[in-house]
Length: 139
Image (spheres, rainbow, N blue to C red):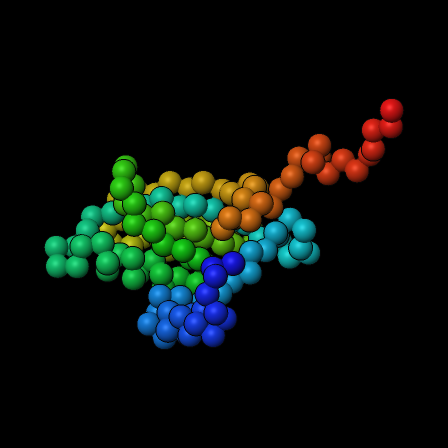
């Protein structure tokens, strides 16, 4: 596709991996079709940054929790967006109430439960029933 020799592309990939440019490879899973069930939420955090470390210390604290899948620094009303995973909505609610909101420097949180993924990492996960209609029109 790139018009380059395979050996060159392989060498570039190895170089990117060794430099940490490529951090890993992950499958995009359509959990609605898998037997495993879980709940995911986007949690917004408004925080007070530390004088010496800015937002980095808060990011480190958030990343340490097993429930936290992703941490993003944002511009806007909230400072961070976290993707959090749990077995139930109650699990996530308790995580926010007992772990996240009790961190020194957290001013407020906003929780948004993810109800359905339509597209994830460039992969379309959901089609309308019209798209799945296998009937044929006969004239």
